[in-house]
Image (cartoon, rainbow, N blue to C red; front, side, top):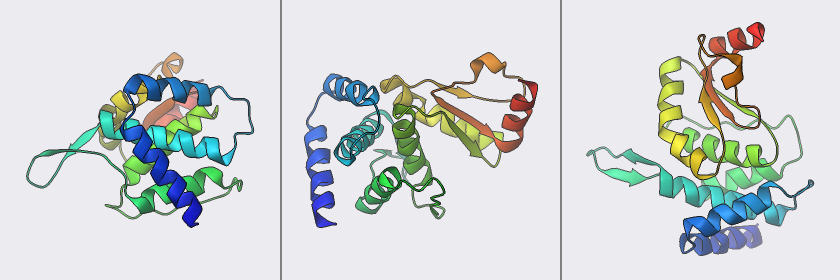
Length: 178
């Protein structure tokens, strides 16, 4: 709705002017609220994660210039819909080049803050390693533990209440060993 869109825009604008310390402080407050969390609190949490992503990660554009990883309006609204939908079988399809990694990392940070553990699986370990290295600073900025899981990873490095990067076969092998 327009009202939600306007609320999201106001929150994003306010966060753009906030210090990292203030954003982290509010994130921690929201992280430890007992459930259920309200849609307004989800909106705040989402907007903090979006701002922290933009401040802590970058990518190279086609000419080799570093640009921050900001989200567009459609991506923000899709994330809000994913977080506020109570259907545990919700499926979202994101095409190649539409910001799947950005959206997934913000969603992972929000889900971890709501008490979940996230396993981020890619088609191969090279992609898992790339995303782990690209987004580790983002997760660290929010005090969220992350790990790169491979066949040689000890089960103690699996981050319960954090984000684990791997490919499908590596995670299955680790889980079978534990």
